[in-house]
Image (cartoon, rainbow over all chains, first blue to last red; front, side, top):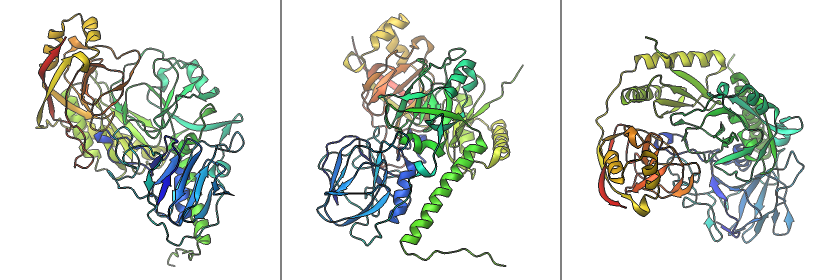
Length: 334
Length: 222
């Protein structure tokens, strides 16, 4: 078991998200950096749907009550286990009584993330609710008691104490799969239903401009600041389903990107959608940083998903080598 | 007579939205339910999610290539053309409501906007049997059809940071009841107590599309 020593709010238990309950009004939740979570689980030999602790506010400290392997992925937070500095994107072994401390995210302008994932051997053991362990903050269920973690909370790792290969890591995806436009972090966007209903000048400004991620940004959505986007005529839409990544434009003209805790329906005009393959990039974008948008197509967006899958496959093969398991090669008959 | 075509648009590679043409009404919504029922069984679809006269389909497997996507869209148009409005014999749920007072802090705004008396607003709001069109927004929340247009009131310019669960409110031409506390841009005119969502139940939401809500006047606070 591990005990939360920080009062740092907003750390939550997340897995890859809760699908299949949108029709009951239940949004997906899930890790803001789904790639960091997937890689952390691979490093530990966990199931890919295992849950971890997402940490967006620092410093953050936990004490291990028993021996436990863990992986740190996501933002590089100058972590220390007692006094020993730890490498990011690496598997480590904690001994009973040791304290893990995460500090402020480090790195150059394009590598500095904003959220660390603390992945534990076997995953964080909390009950599955509606098929997921992710925290549903609005519904107050899932995760640890349906809420953000507090000082004194005690969590269990499903495979604490089990032997686990440690002492190896990987090159983070921000380096392996970089994406920039004009020297600024970028994400790809597929235009959405109301895109053509905006002024041509606004459409141009959207792709050409740099967008600041304002302080009013969180797991629900990122409120952006830039040149206001003007519709050709005011729009009143009927309530409809939305997903994380959808870029809505309310009357102010300043766009809002729906993030993982987004509600499952909305009514504001939709300018575009950040493609699923790039949501992890956005999940790591710090408040106050700038982002640019690159117009993409359906086929390019699918190719981007393939690229992410290929990277995870590569990680899985590398982990398999390190963990000493035999590499199985599928042979085709003939 | 021209028949407006339905429209289909993408939400990244995660989902698409099908929007029914024409006026929003129950007949069209019943066809949306039929379309949701059919498309839920398609192998590339993860979930069919009805909205207000529209349907979101999330992908389990996004169609490979622009050609496959077009084929899926054509199949969806055909399924809509073939969809028959199927009325659902839903349950009727009566919710006792205290209108106005501390539980209905924006009643004065609805009075100001409509020019009607509080008694008349309550009378018009509690008269219909409201069909649940769809669920969304937050766990257990019901989108209702059938509100009297005379009490329609625009959404608030500045959303309220948190309205409690059970808040009965008007947003534009729609009315609804919050299932849990949270931010809202709607005008709260009353309150009721009802548990709309329990994740331990199957299904977790108390009401389904096709069920009906009747608001019973428990009291009016001026």
